Length: 230
Image (cartoon, rainbow, N blue to C red; front, side):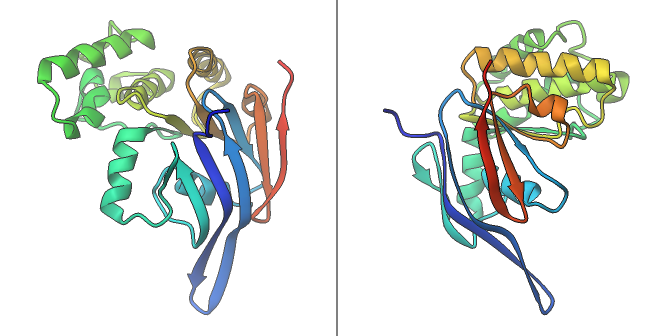
């Protein structure tokens, strides 16, 4: 049996807020295999955002171990974590996080700027991914010329451009109307069918149930870990 893509081993995260110690995660353990489609859910303040920051190598555990693709990233310094993020992770945010001065194709290319790849190769790949998410006719548009659903499609294409081990999505339909949200979730379903590993943080049950597995947090603990029949 192959090793998991993501492995959390009794991960704890504490924050010092003046004289108060806040335990955001309290010994959380789980594995995620290649090709898994996972939603992470729970009430406000349960630890979802902290968990996402750790999964995305934006922060380090206070205790325990996080293995990404078999590599223990728990104790890496900021530069090493930055390299891991750029090479192994794709991010999709509720607010899209696009650069307004850049075109669709330029936004998609951003993660490639740090890989020292030929410019023509980067442009070809970005155009291919724009077509994959249905934006081949919008390559030269700026984000403010696009609908929210189209902007999220750009963000998805950008997340795919470095062929990441794991795609992390934070409330990916949170700023969209219901129709646009359904279209975005169809893209996630297609990515899963193509073998991508997806982790979605959401408070929306209709989004969470699209995944094949739901991890629920409560008060910093893993409350449940359930696979859904599909």
